[in-house]
Image (cartoon, rainbow, N blue to C red; front, side):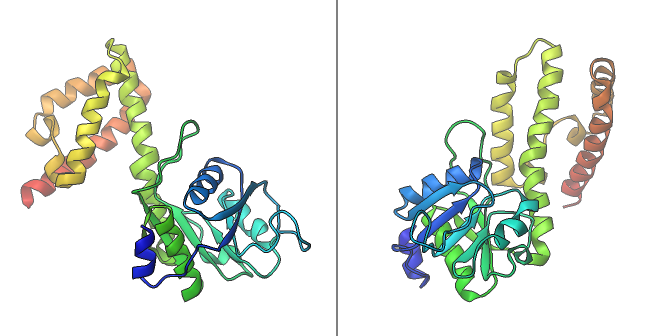
Length: 259
């Protein structure tokens, strides 16, 4: 990926000094990944940290990367004295949160688990910058992390981040519902895993309409009603979710037929 930096005429990060604020999952993952990529990294530091004015830890940082909760970004940015380029890793916040600094956003489009190593390489990353230099640094950092950068404008941030939440967070919530219902039939989570993996692979390869299978696609409404009745008996609080998803699935199936 480093070769892509040179091919795209991006800044040379070899001597870049990067400080990271935010010792949470993403802050720790990025600090480790950037060090592994050969950058000089200071941190991750706790929230409210700022590079000291006199020589010491973090002094002379070229870039300060904020890996703090979205609502904490403005305060964390204001704690940084003028000088370094300041970036945040939020998917939803705009660049205005970094005022008064020139800055950028770098949001890895990847889930970082609470336990185990984070696997960032191979994922995409949303990048943006307050100017051409800031965006170039964000793009170069993405390449150095093994991420594929994609530009996302401030006006599109909320929609982009909602898509990420649906694809990741909501999927986990949905599988939790499936796991709960399967357990009532004596079936463990492990039995569902190959099905889920194959479904995601089919969606990635074929697209949603062609990957869709099951009774709703076949128009077998009697089977759907039996499913709904079992759900109403064993997990009634999930019926509303089932009905909403069944309606959306019918619409998707109709779109495939119409195509």
